[in-house]
Image (cartoon, rainbow, N blue to C red; front, side, top):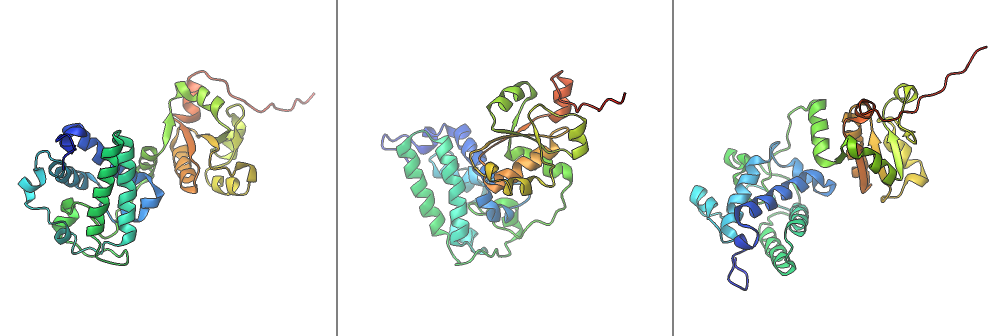
Length: 283
């Protein structure tokens, strides 16, 4: 693929670094977007093999080093996906992530539109099923050798709370404690997602309480909090519960959700003010 000025797409995107950035953002979006959840669940736990294969393929497809062919031979996309049922729904989820990645990474509008068209043609070429049931690919394909969709059976590995928090933090926007005060000033609502006794013992000024376990129910039952454009800042004791809560709000459709890194403990350690309930005086 070349541009009208004979410059290759590989060169136009910034060579190796540019193609890497595009691929990394594509798979990050697959992890982040609720709309691509079904597609993501059909991929391996680690996306590193998928990233490598797609990068190597795109390097050659874009007119750069033909890394994929040198390592594995002709791509033969349809053959490599023959053991998988690639449905219109899976194609559309894949294209959603790639289109968003191109929109963010490619500033040349003409080049971007042509790439979106080419990817659409390629993804449509791989369709082989009307439904989205994954097949039983070979061990080599499960390592990430299939380039485009890389479908496998759903993962079964158990995750720890730490794993869930780490995954959540990769999806959300955290603000450093040094930037927290400004973020709170800019927000429409500040929510403390700790338990009631923690909130009562001391909380940030202006914060309302909605424990992590009841947060979604509180927002769903409060019409004044139903706007998807509501600017929300969350915090908990150290940031784990707030990160999980921020993910949940994103999945509900809220577009501007932030979590305070380090949470209440970092706020106190930074010498920032805390509201504490006044105790009754007995005379």
